[in-house]
Length: 129
View 1 (cartoon, one colour):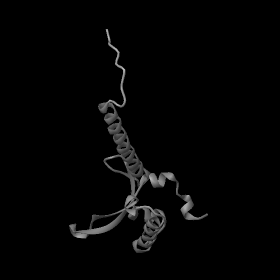
View 2 (cartoon, helix red, strand yellow):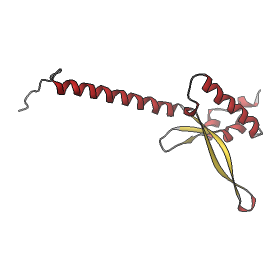
View 3 (spheres, helix red, strand yellow):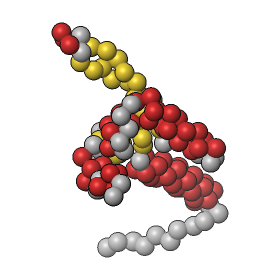
View 4 (cartoon, one colour):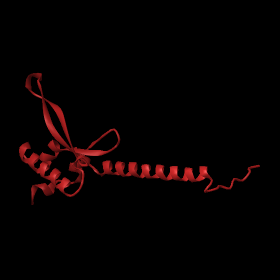
């Protein structure tokens, strides 16, 4: 049995992060050992190919991957900045979709208001007793 097959959804849930907006994401440096990459540079080249494939498919790679950096602790209290990559999820894409839908609804509202204000469309108002 391939060692990767021993991992379950829970493995990925354990390293999942959630931002302040509720969107899920994963850090590449945390995914690498789960996918049995022992060296960051080997996994980084795979991630770079994934980013390139995303762009070649007509998608904006910035919508799916983001470069980030973080500080790691070194011996004797020192710290060092390391680069990482965030894999964004469908939640981010859903937010974008809802924002686009909201913009479309705002345009429709504006058009309807213009029709009402110019008198092209009239509304029957009934008196409430």
